[in-house]
Image 1 (spheres, rainbow, N blue to C red):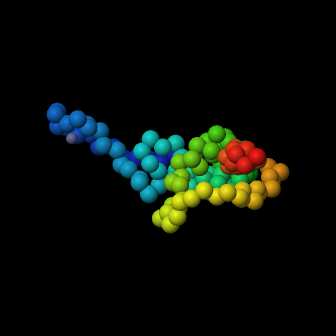
Image 2: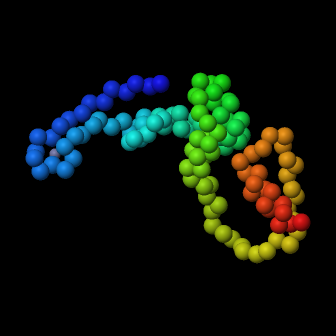
Length: 120
Ligand SMILES: [Zn+2]
């Protein structure tokens, strides 16, 4: 739990639409956020290297209790890596080697299963 003391200012102008102005901390926490940016980044880092359930267990171990769904939601908020410019477009006629399934499931598993089903 993080307590953040925020200064507020009240505008005395009757026509002011805003009325109340609160101090912001854009380098620490976003508006209406329930987690600091640092916590979000930590959960995303754990989430992209494991899966939702394992990430939640690891996060709990490090004092960041959360749910697997929250981890997955935070990972999905990450921008997709850039593929760069497309040099060539074509159809690959031989299937790529399938990666051996690890013992723990991963959030990309449904996609890999989908790809595997397309090649069989
Ligand atoms: Zn004002």
